[in-house]
Image 1: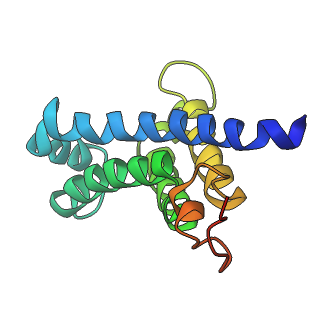
Image 2 (image 1 turned 180 degrees about the horizontal axis):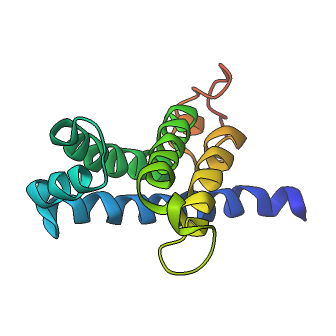
Length: 141
């Protein structure tokens, strides 16, 4: 039963975490705008805020899509986890683990990104379908 549920559970985890990143990246473009995101990044002391703001927005959109599709998962998972570590260091860390502005959600996203990125995408991952997981060829029915 567990083996049968694994591909579906991995797919649901990838979709959930991927959608969260996709939405946050989109917000940096559409809601706050890159200028507003840059201004915020400057206010919290993020170095090279003018470069970091669009880079983070693109990373969150591309990384979120990568998780959803199940492609380049170790790269996407590691980069998204680093993104969240930056959010802890520059934004949420001073607020403590829990409570208003705390880093519990950001820490959970970092851990989920690593877990999804390094457990393999499962049977419904694009990498698996294309045969790029551990050098295996796609299954032929």
